[in-house]
Image (cartoon, rainbow, N blue to C red; front, side, top):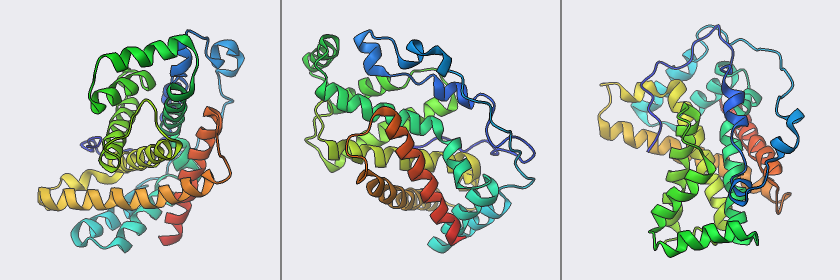
Length: 282
């Protein structure tokens, strides 16, 4: 699974962030509150809905040139050193630094925080409407994969933006991978360790999708057989997962039971630190 990289990727001379990104991230609400019929925090505090204006940073010309060159070397040889250089160059020059990468992925981290909050909530909530939703789902005798789809439908709307479609895809892949790791897991009554595993899988998938959209077009080149392309892409995803998971696990030790907002901050930090590590390898 993965978001298509058929576009040519973002150009230089434009803002690092597309102008519509903040609105997509802000539209990701609190699904538990929606099920319970409670107003969201934004509805209760409408003055907080508009973030403070930030200076617009413009991307340099040929921003991804070196990253694409190193990624091409990796695609041809499978050398992890070339992959690390590609990721480091992508972060430093292509995105203007690891902080910008994390900021660009704020829809991903917001969605991940929403999923974390939702999975804990359906397990722990005593709200009647939430319990009714869980009981109704249980009564339908759905497969685990169908339950996963129902959860994703609650967390991510079907708005159709590229960011939302990517998040839905990454969540589905993360849930599928978890079911491979833990075949007997109950997605409506998950232990915290399983929920954290979903976070690691989801964020790795999102980082992979982001990179694939921005610089991964070469994997569709006729220079590489479908088998070679899939092998390299899977290896790239595995490497991203190992690095991002390590950061999430480290940050988790200081945040035992994060709120949705705290989880969003934690995921932002994990992405930023991971790409700072990649920059050191470039």
